[in-house]
Amino acid sequence: MDSQNQSFRVGAVVSKTFAIWIKHFFLVTALTGLAYVPWTVYAFSNPDVATGLAATGGDISWIPIVLSMVGWLLGSLTVVHLVVTACQGRKPSAGRSLAVGIKRLLPVIGALILLGLLGFVAMFAVGLLSLPLSLVHPALAAVVIYPIFIWMFMSFFVLVPVLVAEPVGVTQAFGRSIDLMQGAKLKCFLMILLLGIVNFGFQFVAVYLAMSIDTLIVVAVQTVLGIAMASLWSVLCAVSYTEVREVNEGVSVDELAQVFE
Image 1: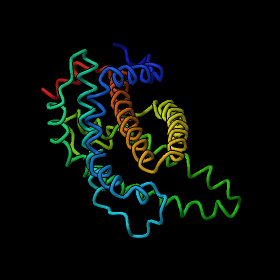
Image 2: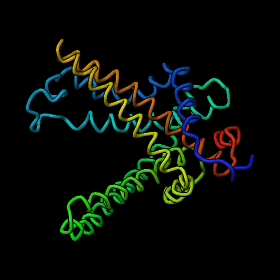
Image 3: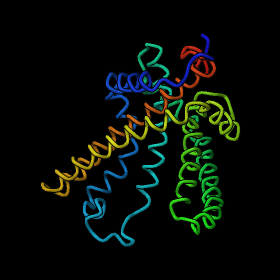
Image 4: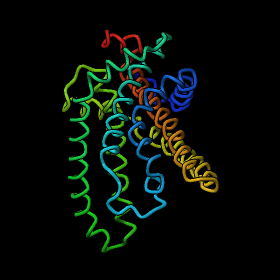
């Protein structure tokens, strides 16, 4: 395949994402739903605090939040293997995908911690840069700052799939993600922005309608929609990774799958 004549195909990524998500909906949402077990248990036992309908203060326990974050991360890792398998036309295995996710969990946690530190440093540096710009005009600082953070976010968009599907270390994964997203950042960002707006509108309407019924209904709606959308985003990220590998390097999903064998 001549990858030089191709670019990131938004339509192909979106259609493939929804095809995999719908076909393997129950498996994908079950794997992603692991993240919501601790928070859901806490939310149903403290519905007013969980939904923000009561003064929270120091009442919210961070334990279910941290456990849910780890669960979400594990779910995202398993979905990478699931997507590669599904793109091959094979039936994904929950056990095999979980095994891959668990194996790569610690390196990914390390990478995300490092990414958080880089983000903090970037915020500090950009904050210093924005001071003289804001003196000229407040909007000028925003015009400079937002593109920097968008560039940073999109450069590391496939960081997690890289760590799952490639035999690289944590620091190498950052470089790989930047290289793979060359030429795809803008299209990928617009795709995420559009889907994000649709998702926000849908969830806002659903939660607003649920609030007129009962607080526990709000928790239930938030949980169901959260699991569904988290699974969709995980599939989207994994499919985007397979797309940039194919477009930039001419690597097929069959070749990608060899790393798991």
